[in-house]
Image 1 (cartoon, rainbow, N blue to C red):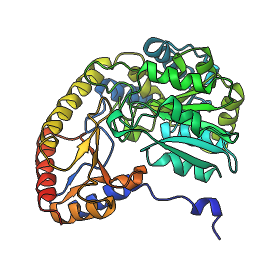
Image 2 (cartoon, rainbow, N blue to C red):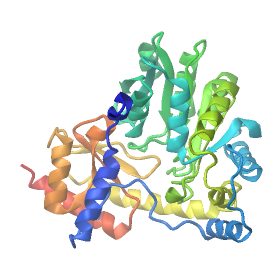
Image 3 (spheres, one colour):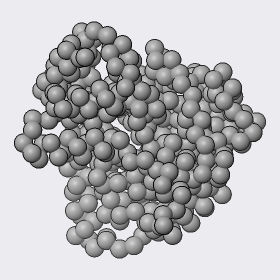
Amino acid sequence: MLTKRSQVLEESITFAIASLADELKAKGEDVISFSTGEPDFDTPKIIKDAAISAIEKGCGKYTAVAGIKETLKAIQTKLKKDNGLDYEISEIITNVGAKHSLFQCIECLVEKDDEVIIPAPYWVSYPEMVKFAGGKPIFIEGLEKNGFKITADQLQKAITSKTKVLMLNSPSNPIGSIYSKEELLALAEVLKNTNIVVLSDEMYEKLRYDNIKFTAFASLNEDALKRTVTINGLSKCGAMPGWRFGYMASKNKALVSAVKKLQGQSTSNICSITQYAAIPALDGRCDQDIETMRQAFQKRRDIALEILEKIPNISFYKPEGAFYFFINIQKIEKDSMKFCKKLLEEQKVAVVPGIGFGMDGYFRISYATSEDLIKKGLERIAQFIKNYN
């Protein structure tokens, strides 16, 4: 009875692990969860106040599919101020989270047997979106010591006549690595004289550490601007995961038009109250709140780093952004699902198996939790690894 395309989708492993951890907590188990990729900070007060004000003013009506002008203008201002990007209001669309932005772009760009290049390890939803559209994910694995970032040579070798899209994520989930401007320029040079669209997922843009700079792919040059869809949102940097606010910006007028039509026939506009709430998160009024979170995440990263460096037989890339460690356990166990299930059963620590990110023999932890829980949970992991058999 179900369509074939609906049956190719796999459940998100991150949500599956988080749900299992919640079930154990509900039974009274002392579970520490490093699974969910969401800030543990409350949404900044100025954002909540903007939402309350919108409700009180009766702003709960339908809006234009792309969003209200005030929110689109705030996105336009943000992209110019933070990234040096000039987009017209008509080139910007608000979506139900950046996941929605990515999904709709894939649906409008990819057809049966089209190839989509995805650096591995990857965010769990990327290949599922491609498969749902009938496309074929083409994975490229970089070197662990370089944060698995792909090189221009690897990209060149992966491109075929069927290549339609390149998906980039910087800062990355699950690695936390950030492409330098020079690395991005090398990739952009390979793409010249092709029709390949770049979907640049920049969700963790403002969560960067050690003064490492961020470069938006579309800002590299005119060619990059024309071929890139800049995708971002407020789930991570704005501590608004449940508000479901994402957006996309593109110079590809045909794509923007197609996405608007698809959204108009599916969700219509995103939540009107969320649109009003997003404005202070975009126009700079929340910059200090974001910086406070960033500093807290960097401190947590450093605490986790100090503990992890003392655990034998594991390796990892020091995160430059986001709030994850992606840990290599191949010297201990190559089956990441087996390892993570035993860890949850025996030590009551929930982490995400690397197989979900396309890399078995690894697991991901999120340090978007308190310093005490980071210390306690990592000590349990260290004990578990010491006695693993």
